[in-house]
Image 1 (cartoon, rainbow, N blue to C red):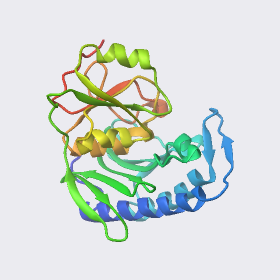
Image 2: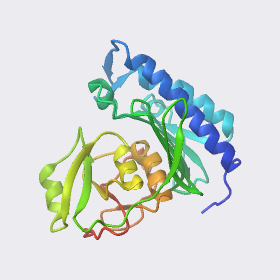
Image 3: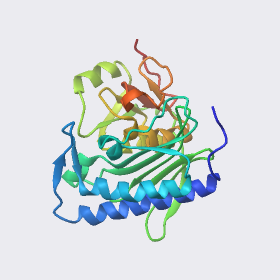
Length: 271
């Protein structure tokens, strides 16, 4: 895999955080209004906040890395589909507003997701939850959580070892199959199943407040790329159900079912 980043690592980190915060501010401006909801061609909801965030993120990324292609959910929905695959050195993967259903329900569990993919693997990522005041960042130097504004605090985060009293499993707040989840968990010692929205599920595992996130339903690459980068930087794993590596740059950008976990959680791989 290509190791040299397309720009200075610190410049990328600072730039991504700034872009994510600006996009989050634009989202919040609309969140506080009586916004309209429209349906895309696939019947999924979209709002003016999705568009406003993308309008900030795309030029921001082009300013950081002019030669790196960008795959963004709303642009792809509009037919702007860059030619990328698992052999592409770098591309940006963007979900301007992940968790649109959570945004519509006004529960605060939505995020701005931006990841840098290198030959099919996330190497940088930022996940920003503006209502919660949490910004997760993952890169070559590890993962961190930045909280608070205007005087933010920053602390490193890592996955935790499997607790003796049972694991915390996170699942989708808006999508999910309880029977399939229970069948997957089998005889794993489970202390709590906690619902969460958007890519926050991956970040909860990265932060060490949860241990396992099995996704047994459809997702797109932009839904999880940034959270995957944060989790990987925190020492976690995202893998296919059969235990093989999870790769980006797939045709159509759809994901297979997957497992996100702390390495200490023993799962039964399928297939």
